[in-house]
Structure formats: C-alpha cells, structure tokens
Length: 510
Image (tube, rainbow, N blue to C red; front, side):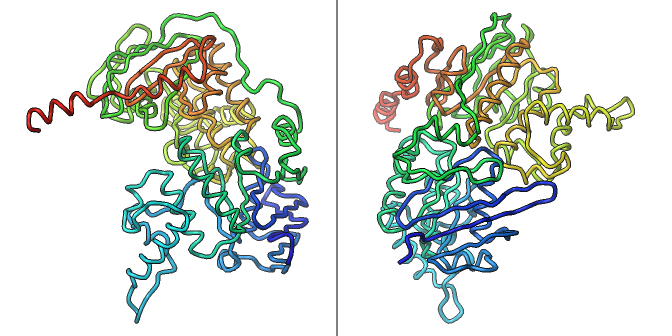
C-alpha cells in the first residue's frame, strides 16, 4: 500500500499576468492532518482547486493511491474520494439537511424520489459523526457550526477519503471548535486524510501532524509539527521574522467624537451607551451572539433603531440608512465581506470608487477618471493589495486581499469614525499586521476607531479601551493596560438572569 494517499508533484498554474503556482509539491498520508499554510495569495486555494478538479494544472502530476490522474475534474475528484469544504459554506438554506446532503445525487425508486432511503442514509452518516441533527430540519434554521457539520456529512456520504477544509473555524465559538476537532480526530482515526487550511495558527497544536508552507506561489518547506514552533512557521510563511504581531502606537487622547445614548435595536441591541474619542481605538469583545455586529449595524443605519441618540462632535445626528452615516462621517467595514462589503462581479477599481462617487464626480455628475485612477492606485499601494491589475474582478482575489479592499475604499473619505467588524477574519498573520498598522494610522490622524473581534489577544493587543458585550448589552469596560483574558471572559458571560421574570409569569398564569 502506498504511504501517500495524494501526491502532487511540480504543479504550476498561470493566470493572465500572474503565476499562481510555480513547481509546487504536496503529499498527504492516510490518517493524518496536514496543515497547509501560507499568506493570502500564496497559492493555497489554487492548488486545492486543482486537486478538486475546479482548475486544470499547466504542468505537473497528480497521483491518488499511486495512480497518475489525467484530466482531473470535479466528477472524477468525487469518484476518487476528494471533497472540499469551503470557507463560505455552499448550502441551500431552503432545503432540508438530507436534501442538501444528496443534492445532485438524489436516490430514486422506479423514477420517484426515495425520501425514506435518503433520510435513512443521512441519519446513518450523521450518527457516524455523533452529530445530533434531524435530517428533516431546514438548513437555514441551523447555526453556522451545524451547517458545517452537514457539509462534512455530505462529503462522507460520497465516501470521501481526502477532505480539504478551508478556514473551517472562522465563524465558530470555542465550544463549536472543540466539537469540530473531535470530528476531525475521529475521521483521522478512520484513515481519512485531511488537508487543513487556517490562519489561526494557535489551533494547529490540537490536530496537526505535519505542516506544508507556500509563499508567493512556491513550495517552501514541509515539517513535522512536533519539530517546529509558531515563530518558525510564521517566518517560513512571510519570509521574515515578525517580531511585533500587535503593533500599537501611543497618541494623545483627543476630544469626544462619538457618543451613543440608550441605543435599542431589536433583541440584540439593548440600551447601549458608549463613547469614542479622537485618536483612540476601542475594541468590542464578547462571545458569538453577544450583539456586537448588530450594534455596529444599528449605528451605521443598516438595521432600524427603536430608540436612542447618536452624537457626532457634540451634535445629534439622524441616521436611518448607511448614506446618512457616511454623510455624518461614520463608515463601516462589515463582517461578511462578500455579502455586505464587496460587489464581487465588479472590478477592484469599481469597488473602491463605488462608495466615493460623491467625491469623484464633477458638478455635472461625471466621474473623473483621473481622480478615480489616483484613488485606486493609492489604495492598492498603501494596503499592498496583490493583484494583476485594478480591473480584475474583486471576487477573484484571495480573502485577505478582498478584506483590504473593503477597508481601503473608505480611506479616501474625510471620515471621523471608522468601524471594523472582524477585520482580520480569514487573513494571514502578515496581512493582519498591515490592518493593525492601518488602524494605527487612522488613530494618529485623529480618527476614532472602533472594532469588533472574536480574538481576545487581538483586542488586548490593539485597543486602548475594551468594551465587553453579552446578551445584547454592554456588561463591562476595561482599560487595556489592566485587562486580562479572564476578566474579559467574566464580563462576556454575564448573561441576564431571567428566572425571576419567568417565575413572575408563572405566578400570573402566563
């Protein structure tokens, strides 16, 4: 029996103007987790798309179980037991769990869909993974973590032996990550080979056997995980040592620029009161579902407010829609960059220009090409966005470069408050440092910066103050110099005690 279940040798791939892969190799053993690492744009996704048959390689060979595979395509990849779980889940929310699992592979009997057989098989796969989900549940009613479990079950229902996981923990809580790792270790013990892509390097120690690193489309190294430390991994990824992962700058705290009074919006934004000063970075921490994103959306006018007041530079402003917020000097880089932050079918240049048409147009309403070119060139250069040219579709870029566009399009504005919601999710360590430096530049320019993050080291490393939310409320505020992860977690778990209300309801017969 071959030691390796997959062998990719001398793989090269070129797109117009960009050599994405240059003589790359990758080997995967049975029953191992191979961490596949590299900066955004290093070529990881391209190589995985070649392995799963989405892209065709320009050069090199692919072997599965020792057999050379020519003309790889998605159907052949599935037949060989190769499955990929993308960072953005590919689920049909209006269909049930079992309908999603067998989508495109429906079981029939005498030409009629066999719901009973599909239900039985879906339950068998879910039980194998010890996942307690009813196959008849609508996927749209499941939490993201459960949808991810369904994606894994779908892959296993095709008898997948080679599983590619792309940033699988980016939207999961700690408890959900633990459950995912349990499943990964179970699949590993059953002989499944897993290629694991993640920028959360701290989680690798729980599951990883070996590490392979790419940089700028080139193979750099393969190491046994037990023989390498995190600093060496980062150095291999970026080609240099990153001494300060959380660069901070000290600025004199300026005047109050933003004040939120008694803000209420739905169930997850309740009586929010906060202040933000010029030249200050405030981090908003909390567990998933704490109401952090909902608060940023209410401030920016995406979601309707029930009550409350927003004050900019001492003046009360009315914000009913994002246009009002932008006019008042408040901008938002949203959590879901593809859904809310980008037009993926438009070019990078158009994405940067779109929210800035008011300052790019002349009095006749015509866009100045010169101004637009200057704005786009400056944004791409300042944020080191990797692309062939500014006219490529934003959707074709890596996740980290997409995030930079979402952030960069606001830089040309005379904004007073910049709100970032999970700005570093799904991007590599070097790109994170670039985002932190961007925040620092805004801070030095006297702009108030507010950012939501689920990574406590990030919040503690970059913020001047930390606001903690739980159950839709602010439950604590800490000076960064005095904050610890334990203190943040205590405030993040101050759930409202509703037992007295429940008892009162029962007493009143409700």
